[in-house]
Amino acid sequence: MTTARVMSSEYMWWAKSSSHSTYNLANSGLAGYSLADLPVKIEDLEINGTTFYGYEPLQKAIAEKSGVSTDCVVATNGASMGNFLALAATLDPGDEVLIEHPTYELLVSPAQYLGAEVKRFHRRFENSFSIDVSEIQKAVTARTRLIVLTNLHNPTSALVDEETLAAIGEIARHAGARVLVGEIYLDAMFEEAPRSAFHLGPEFIVTNSLTKVYGLSGLRCGWILAEPELAQRIWRLNDLMANIPPHAAERLSCIAMAQLGTIRERARNILDTNHNVLSTFLSHRDDLEAVYFPRGTVCFPRLRSGRVEALCALLREKYDTTVVPGEFFGMKDHIRIGLGCEIDVFAEGLSRLGLALDDLRGKLEERGIDAKSTVV
Ligand SMILES: Cc1ncc(COP(=O)(O)O)c(C=O)c1O
Image 1: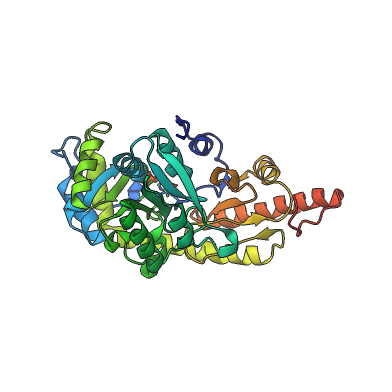
Image 2 (image 1 turned 135 degrees about the vertical axis):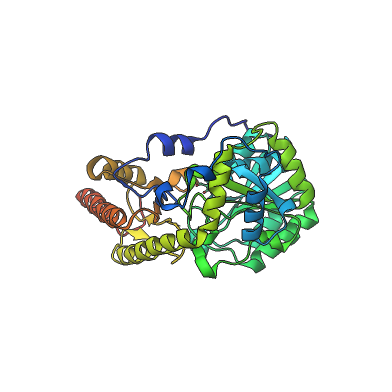
């Protein structure tokens, strides 16, 4: 059985057309870092360069940051193109791909677009969204070519430990498959961040970018780490779609790479403050149930009673605040709260979420339903 070819992303459509509000807690990344805060001189930029398969200074900066050699690095237009190329380079139509559930929708829809058969393994609320390696073991077949997960996990920020990753690598190796790990949120662990899964063996492919933790989405500085032979194939595949990247962006990316320490400190200040506010908020709400991780840029609480759709509509229309409805991750009782926005915006957005929850509780009580009970 092949999965129907998907030609669009419902989540991206929603994110681009409906997620905006004054108190936007729908974004999984840090508030935008400004060009004015980078030490850029006009003479540092140029329109045309000599990049064909990677701009050498940027290749070196990514390789150094990741602790790999430059022949393992494929620079991409954001982690989005990185994910697409990694999927396209490893999956033929009819191949099976085993993808975590819940996950970022744009790991699933491109696989369906490519004609792969998508199977899922579960990261369950009851197990703190950890990975049950035995479930992967049981689900792998002779047709499995790729196992896909995110670390930190989008939408929950759960960390997958190295032992679990190594066990998944082992399963993949025996099956003749590879493991794609999206590490776009991993740097939000700061000095506690483990090394990249790429170092665990040649079957690992990693995607990453400066978009989320560094607030540099508009730079589109993304990359893939892959063993050199695969990296070479990915460069050649990229020729079908992207030719060369904008050279000015490559140069700006190098400047940003040299400033990552400073940019990281800003991210840490925002996230530390917002995590304190969120953990206090959650401890006072008996209508939300969360597996809370003190690191990461997102949290994925479950609404105990009532409909998330009604909550999100109320939040948006009455309180000018947005969170991501869990349905975009295949879990309709949850909401994803992003912690990366400016601290005053976050505190206000969260208090508005509290007001919307109170309103919802009032409506449920009118119908004789207890907001703390797990019923819909
Ligand atoms: C797991 C994951 N990969 C990739 C992306 C997109 O990354 P980029 O903005 O670098 O293209 C996202 C965005 O939310 C994501 O969550």
